[in-house]
Image (cartoon, rainbow, N blue to C red; front, side, top):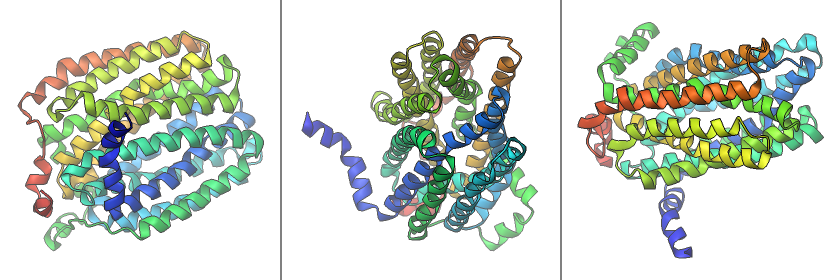
Length: 434
C-alpha cells in the first residue's frame, strides 16, 4: 500500500522537485492563501460584532464579488498586455498594505471601511488571479499541467482547511488586530518567492500592442475570441454556472455556524475546514475516475448534481459531525469542477488571449456568486424562509443546473478529442514543450 501511495504521489513530487519556477510560484500561493483564509473570519467577526446583521454579513461577500466582476475585464486586458510576474508582485504588495487597514475599524461608524478596503483588495485580486493561472502553462510542460493544477488546488484546500481552522481560534482568542497583521506579513513573504520566479510569456508584437492600445478594443477582442471558440467557452462557463447556487450555500454556512450550531467563528472554521478537505481530495479522485479529458465537460454536470444532493442533506441535519462529512463529500465534486474547467481553459486558450479568458471566467463567476448571495441574504433578512429551507432551495436549484448542463452543454463536446491541446498547438510559443 505504501508503494502504491508513493507511485500515485510521484508526479506531484517530481513536479515540485524538478521544476523550480513552479515550486516558487506554488510556495508563494501557499503563504498568501494561508494569510487570506487566516484573516477572512476576522473580517466576518468585525461585521457581526458591530452590526449583527445577516444582510450586512452577506453584503461583504457581494462587495467582494462585484469588485472582482467590475474590474475583471480591464484586469484581463492588463494581464495579456503587460508582464504577468510584475503584475503579481505589485498586487501582493498592494494587498499586504490594504489588509492592515482593517485594524482601523473600531466602531459601527467605521464599518464602511471594511467594505471599501475589501473592494480595493479585490481589484488587485482580479489582476493577480488570471496572471497566476495564465502563467502555470508557461512554467510547466503539457504533461505536467494537470498535476500542477491538482497540486495547486490540493494545496489551496489544505491551507484553506488549516488557515480557516487556526484563523477561527486566533480570531476568538488573539483578537482581530493580530490576525490582520499576520495576513499582511504573509503577502510580503509570498512576494519574495514570486520575485525569484522566472515566468516566460509570449508578449504582444509591436503591431498587436498598437492594435490593443485601446483597452476597450482589447476587451472586446477577448469577448469575441470566446464567442468564436466554443470549445474554450464551455469550460469557461463551468465555474459561473456552479456558483449560481453554491455561492449562496457557502455563504449560508456562516449563518449555520452562528444560529444552528451556535458555535460562532469556531464552528465556521470547522465547516470551512471540511470544505477545504473535500476540495483537496476531489480533484485527485476525479482525475482517476474521469481519465479522458473529452469527458470532463460532461463530468462537470454530474459534479453539480452530486454537490446539490449532498447539501440538501446538510440543510436538514443539526450535527456538526455529520455536517462536516457531507460538506466534505460535496466539495470533492466542486473541487473537481474547478480543476477540470481550469485545465481545459489553459489547454484550449492561446497565451495571447489566456488572461482575458480567465478574467472573463472570473467576471461570470463573481457576478453569479453576487446574485446568489444577495438572493439568499434577502430571503433570510425578510424571513421569507428559514436557514434550512433556504439552503434546501439552493441545493435543489444546483441539481437542476447540473441536469441543464448535461442536456444543453455537454453534448457539444462530442467532437472534441480525448486530449485537447488546441491552444498549445496553435501557439508556436509552446512548440518546444510538446
